[in-house]
Length: 260
Image (cartoon, rainbow, N blue to C red; front, side, top):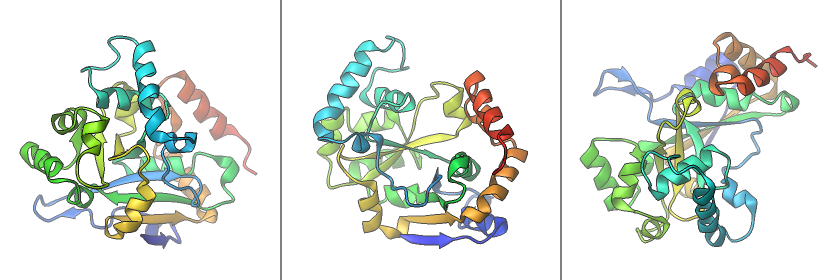
């Protein structure tokens, strides 16, 4: 994996928008999904993996009980992938990992924790178009039929109705999925998820095997305050990304905390 340590705000922007020009469209349209983390030493382990134990054994019971106790109309269409996306959105441990189309939103999550401003942060970038070229034929065919670059939950269901169906496809792979717009938070965060072919598959290991699809931008600790201040000026804050009073309170608490 290509790792780039940026030195200033200008270089950070240059790297975030690198390779975004689409000659065919005549527009800047990046093929990268972005994930910001406050610590550059963080990995890309899913919440299900961090839970510990046998991920394959506990994934299905977790989701089954989530479905049992959730409201009947909680998802627009009753499917495994809609329920999995909703569960991830509400912090149930799943094999999904949060990403965004927006480099600025990724920068927010890389600079939202003031207590670690003395340590480097990072933004991961994965080219989902190139990643999908490495997916099984059935999935690639579904993208081609829909003239799409990213999956919806309905598109995944058309190929694999459940975990077992997905696991039967050839090899380990990752796909990027846009969740239904459950609420304003999903919409405002310009969110999408990565989905691995197996519950216990490692995205870190997959990316190490395919370094051509990813890069990691390291944000030095000494640059974090500048990035944070400029994001606040651009209104990329908790108030916008977490609509409601909880997000407002989180933004105010961070914004008015004394700078140490």
